Length: 199
Length: 259
Image (cartoon, rainbow over all chains, first blue to last red; front, side, top):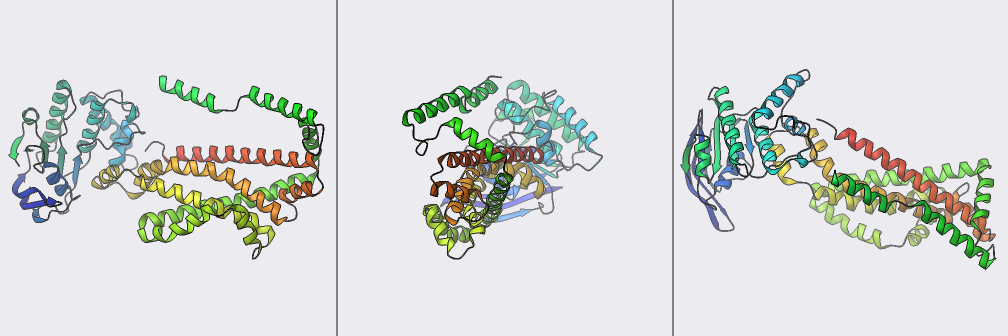
């Protein structure tokens, strides 16, 4: 499986932020889009998500695909607990709640959020909220996962914890998913053992 | 822990203290003794006695029930239509632009002008409901629209990306965003309903209402009655506000409880 962007262009108020960008993202690896600030990384992220239209160019292979994302901001339901935030996006059939909760509990444990599942998000630290936002995307059903600077704001220990959990999940998914990560930190790329593509 | 202590302190600061109420009652009693003119300022003890006599009359409760039902009906109708119009305005800019001058005028017109104007084409029986409706509608509409405009677009975008069903979006994104605005509108609206509703009754003088008794007190210079009925209005307004807001908070917790 792959998705392909061809000659993507986008400008805001006459300022070209994405110019003639082409790339083919295939499944089974983490693609790390790197580039300096203002090079259009987030614009590309939003175009891939379908939240912004490109001025020119083609987007091949995203139709009818389930796309999920880790946004640059956490975008959590602050008043609700970690479990609520995860269940909010996870389709849970009647009778499957127990299994889902066990899955959530296991995932929280893996990223260092064990025993905090029932805490309201507003009471968590910035790094904890970031990990909840990452779990929300990783636990959901997706074909394409987009992550905009997912490891931003995490300390070294938690970065490693989260990076190895992302890789573990991808291995479990039998390499059938396309994962794209936007970052400007070389260290993050090394942590997730990603394939770099420059903007 | 600190946060809850601060909340408790601010609640204590906001709530009315019994000692302050007693002080004001003593000031009232003192002033009435100095004036020594029952028509001008009746003693609180005498008002309390009058109130006790009134409660023994079956007509007393019938009047309260009738006036309250008319006022509450007007408040609920305004709440319902205010929400509908705010949704319309949020969805369509032209509806908002169309309604803007109407609500600006409604907010500016004095309640007495409205009452006299409405008496021309409405029976005095239905007047209080209509006046309450007219007074509360702009408050409800403005607050609801403001709440809808304060919606967190980033969260909505997230919910769209994750294909969250619409009813879950309403429960966990829309309602929590609108809640503080709606709650404030209800709080202000209830107080306003009783003030404007009773004012409409005093001017329209429909039979079997609290307003009619207030009007008679004025005509016969029956100050104890006037004070007693005023206290009744204050009490029913506060009791209704407390019960209604309690119900609202319970409903809100039910709606936004665990997913």
